Length: 201
Image (cartoon, rainbow, N blue to C red):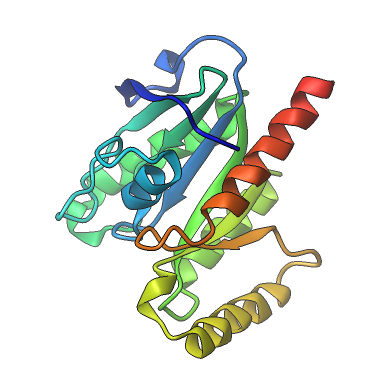
């Protein structure tokens, strides 16, 4: 898929104020500092489309970006940033849950995982929650350029093995790097294949 046009549409904290219409939405979520904004910028080929922040946990909004005038990328708040305080964490949780569970246009959730880290309980619990609610999701391993390929493959194998303890069938997964554009084509082709399925219905 070629992205010819990507534009920021709206930011808000209320799912009811998200754009009207039936265009499919592909939401991106992950723990703070996992490289979400960089990934969105890499996918769209627009350097400053999603704002990358030096302060983890800065995004507290649902951000909609219209792609090729026929589908949306949705940038969701990062979760698990402890320094936000209890009230902030609860607010973020409400925004995330409202969007994921109530937004009918949400077609697939891409859950970003830092490929350098061991499986984190916060991510595994979040996946379990998605499974309990029947939310369609895929895993996106980020920052793959930061590891040698042997270590990268070992980390991903370890992660999938951990998931197999809980899941009969593993979700689709992608290995990406915002630095060298690894995984860009695979991710966009995956989105395109879902869009084609929707349009064929």
